[in-house]
Amino acid sequence: MNDIISLSERLERIATAMERLSPPPLPAPDFTAADAFLWEPRRIGLRPVASVSRVDLRLLKGIDRVRDILIENTERFAAGLPANNVLLWGARGMGKSSLVKAAHAAVNASADAPLKLVEIHREDVATLPDLMEIVRAATHRFLLFCDDLSFDTGDAAYKSLKAILDGGIDGRPDNAILYATSNRRHLMPREMVENEQSTAINPAEAVEEKVSLSDRFGLWLGFHTASQEDYLAMVRAYAAHLGFAIADDELVRAALEWAHTRGARSGRVAWQFTLDMAGRLGVRFAGE
Image 1 (cartoon, rainbow, N blue to C red):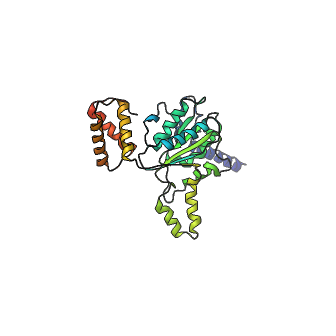
Image 2 (image 1 turned 120 degrees about the vertical axis):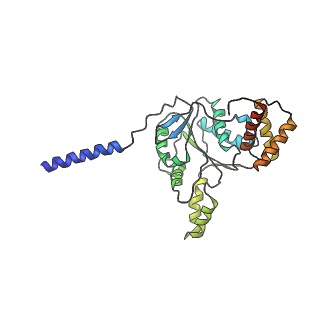
């Protein structure tokens, strides 16, 4: 009898110790606190973001076609109509993440019920099932956003994302959609895919396993390196927005020289030039 009591006490102590080691449950989110949130699964769950760092949609130049497609898809989703998950891929600095945030703001400006933007860090992709459970129980509609998404050799987190997109038993909640940006069309480095092809017993099946992740995004929107005309259009738009007192020929000369020193033309390079010019002209402003 004493042995049974002793065993029971030990089991109770073990259970108490395990409870102390377990992380506390995440607090219920207050979705009225903001229209944008940051997913922090190891700390507080969904953290409200009062002011989102974004560029006005009108300032994004040279991406008119993909802009219109993304806006239309987002508007359909906000209205409760069928819409696709979107992969925005391509050249660095061409406004992929800026477009997602700007599209969210533009659609919310006219939506009856605002979309909730939730940013997910790349390293937290494996916790997406936990986020989906929170989203599924909410009455709002959610635009889930993962910036600079990619996977390296040996990284199995992509399997969690595949299940979330459309492969799991639960499927994606009707009130959630996923937008992701990446420099890679298939979200994985070329050498990773080629290595799978060269070492696998069945090369075709090995490659299919890797590239099928990007196939689960219904829309692929490609971003390409800016032409000189588009680059200068970006610079002129920023300059007009900030009220630069400078002649156009001088602005163009300085902008082309800046792009030459950077070895690239993109929206990011145009914005960095604008920051430099604003400093030289003594223009004070709150960063976009």
